[in-house]
Amino acid sequence: MTNTNTPCDTPSWTIETYVLHNEAMRVQSEKFQAERDRRYAEVATERALAMKIKETADLAALELARESQVYKDERNDAMREQTLSQTGAYPTHADLGIVVNKMETSINLVAERMEAALKPLSAFMQNSKGETKGTRLTVQNIYGAIAAASAAAYIVFKATGH
Figure 1: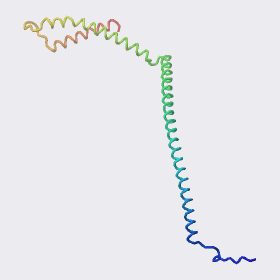
Figure 2 (figure 1 turned 135 degrees about the vertical axis):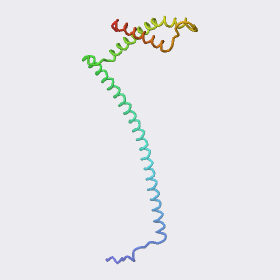
Figure 3 (figure 1 turned 180 degrees about the horizontal axis):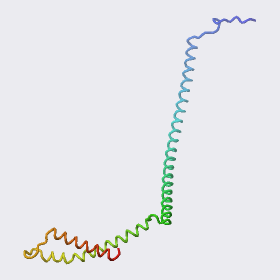
C-alpha cells in the first residue's frame, strides 16, 4: 500500500482544536510563571539570608581585626619600652614619670620659698594701705620686688643643686 496522504488530506486546525490548544498553552504558561515566581522568591529569600550572614561575618571580622590591632600595638609598645630601657638612649614612660615628679617637688619647694620671701612685702602692703605718708607702692615697684624675689629664688634653687 502506498501512502496517498497529501498535506491537504491531513487533519487541519479547527476552531475547537485551536481553542483547546490555546487553553493548554495558557495553563502551561501559568504553571511556568508560577514556578518562575516561586524560584525568584526562593532566591530573594536566600539572598537576604546570605546578606545577613555576610554582615554578621563582616562585623565579626572587623571586631577580630580591631582586637588583633590592639594586641599588636600593645606588644609593639612593650617591645619598644623594653628596647629603650635596655639601650638607655631615650627615656621611658617610667623615666619621664620620675622626672615629672621631681620637677613638681622642686616647683612646689620654690613656690613655698617665694611665698615665704614675699610675706613681708605682702604684710607691708597691708599695713601701708591708705597711708598718705611714706613711700607709695606703684605697679613698677611691685614688679621690681617680684623680679628681685624671683632672682633670689633662682639663686637659691641653683645653690641647692636642683
